[in-house]
Every structure is written in structure tokens, then in C-alpha cells.
Length: 254
Image (cartoon, rainbow, N blue to C red; front, side, top):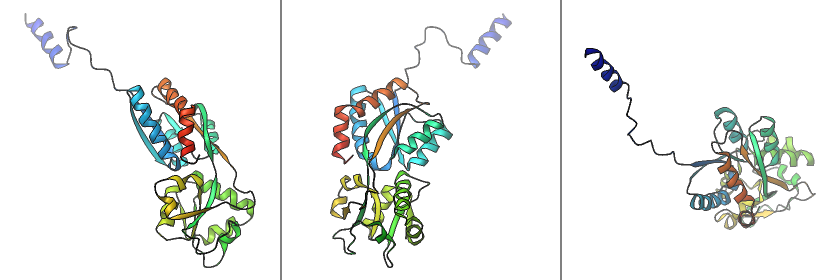
């Protein structure tokens, strides 16, 4: 009798339950998208559509493309990776963290100046090294826009001069936009698509970069190798790559 009582006590202490108890409710499906800062608005719009149609919870982590890639490598978290240029996709693939991928549109850089272009920029890159001009460019080690600025200015032969005179090297396109909107600089090299974000067009003018230095870059979205639900992640990828998804990206300038 004492033995039976002891067994009952042990089962109680260690939380053993009878087979009559209801199983724990299934965990809610969710999707985490790691998105370059310039593409946040169209991706967020498609996330809302996906959440409603699939009954899942969606979340986003946005920032510089390089930082997002490092986050996936270190933390092994994130279902979708969407950087601003395809070179980061290539790096991530070499690191073994990507699976299926699709093209969503194109990204291209332009010169942005204060509204009305008071300094009279023409789109010639050498003007960014003009004495007395306040310029900001992206940091090449932090985000896609900085990497592209480095490539464009190096091709033109003025990167070292512009970088040494720059008022600031910003981490991403959002920071560059804020510097120009706040009047802290006269010009920035940024992605064309920022003109379609909020009321940016009321605060800045966009000039094409002369000389053919600004290339169109494919925007590629990929499922990560650490996706918690690869089928769900692929379904979001397909939505974004569909005619419906591409129409959203085009509306935002991609």
C-alpha cells in the first residue's frame, strides 16, 4: 500500500497525465520576412493580403541588407530574405542559407536633391565632389544602397573623393532620405523607389544619373534554408511573384 502511494505521488509531482486530457492546441502558423528598407511598403501590403488569405500571422524585420543576412546566418531565424540588390542574394546563397527564389522587379539608383534643386545639380557624378556641397552616401558594408553608390562612383572614378568629403555615410536608404528631407545635406545617391514612399516627392527632386552608370538591378526574394514552414514561405514567394504581386511592386516604383 505504501508503495502504491509513493508511485502516485511521483506521477503527480512530475506532471504525468491520463490519456483523457485534451491535447495542447496547435501552434499558430507564422511567417517572418527579413526585408531591405526600401521595399518595406509593398512587402507589408502583400503581407496583409497573405495573412488574410492564409489565416497566418506575419511579421517583418527591416533594415540594411547586409545586417539582415548576418542575422539569418547567426540566429538561424527568418523565413524570407529580400535584399535591395542581387549581390546579397549571391552572398547568402554561398553561405548556404537560401532555397527557392523569384525576381520581383528592378531597383535602380538616382541622384536626389533638395526640392527645387537650389544647387543646380545636373546628374553628373563629379558634381558630388564640388567644394561647398553637402553630400551623403550609403555605407558599402551595411546596405545595398551603399554598395551601389560605391560601384557607381568607382566606375566614374570619383568614389574616394566623394567618400572623403561626404557629410555622412548612412546605413540605409531611409537614413539617406531623412538627411535630405531635414535639409542636412544637398544631395544623396539613393534608390529611385524612395520617391514613391509617403510624401517624399514633395520634399525632394530626383535626377537621372548621367553617363549610364546607374544599372537596373534585379530584385530577388528567397526562401531561407531555416524557414520554419517551407511550404508556407514558398506560398508567400509565389504571391509576390504573381501578376497580382508584381502589380504592387510596380506601383511602388520597382
